[in-house]
Amino acid sequence: MSYSPDLSSGFNGTRLRTPNHASCSGMCSDCVQECPALCEIGLSAIRGTEAAYPANPNGSQFASEKKYPIDFSDFNINGRVFGARGLPEDADIAHPLSVDLSCSFGIAHPVAQKMPLILPAVAKLNWQDYYAGAAIAGVTAVIGEAVVNKDSGAEFSNGRLTYSPLIKDMISRFRVYDRGYGDIVLQANYDDVSFGVLEYAIEKLGVKSVELKLGQAAKGIQAVSKTMSYEEATAIKAKGRMVYPDPASPEIQKMLSSGFKPVFRAMGRLPMYREESL
Image (tube, rainbow, N blue to C red; front, side, top):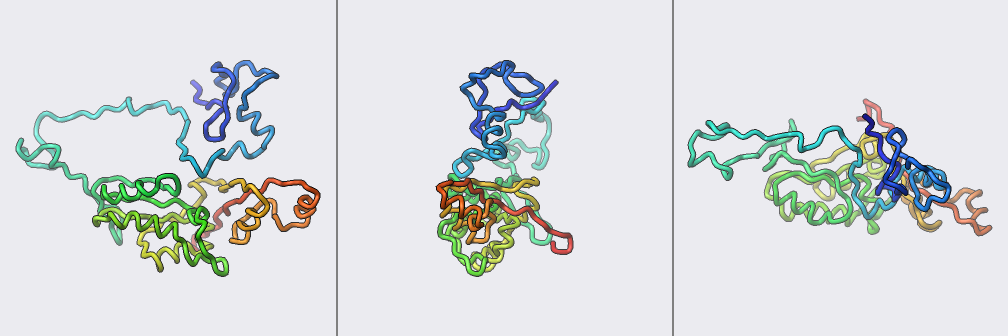
């Protein structure tokens, strides 16, 4: 049995022409010359490595399209009809509203929670209600890595973050509804550490919980986003981020003067941590 994915995805805006697919390759079973669609093969042939990155990263959240051989419907929750666990065997006490799901995580400085849940990282879309809801529910929520890259009001001095109204607003959104349970956690990737995002958040905003990312999105790829203009690429590079190709290089300057507009990509650095540095 094959679980190979089809060569189309909402992730990169591709689609297949026909519902009949070859299971071993994910291609249409009849690939035609006059195809009006754009599958991942066509996209990669035209745009190269762009096929490996999302089409709309700033306006979307992505979930896995992988077809797993099991499903949540394969699991059953078997209730008990005799006795009780965790509560006295008393019908007036052992009822749903008496259930206690509280827990904690952490060793040196445990964080108490009302439920055993940690909401995954978000740094875009409706984060306001996301963080507020976590605080109201008494669970932990995570601010995604590289959030400072989305902050148009961020200020830097000598390559270090000195002010970020977006991070401040995100933390405040949780703190307004904080009931003493859960926490707001700030992720930091390699660039964030280099920019001093953690120091700023801890010293200026009182952040107590952080998460070091040992790889962008927990995997060994670099975060890559397309920039729409030379001016934008230059501004991003001035903040200390990597831009490819280098907008200041003589070759690019020559291309620009001749009317050619190259495609710039801002890239996150891969971590080069060592055990002793951690």
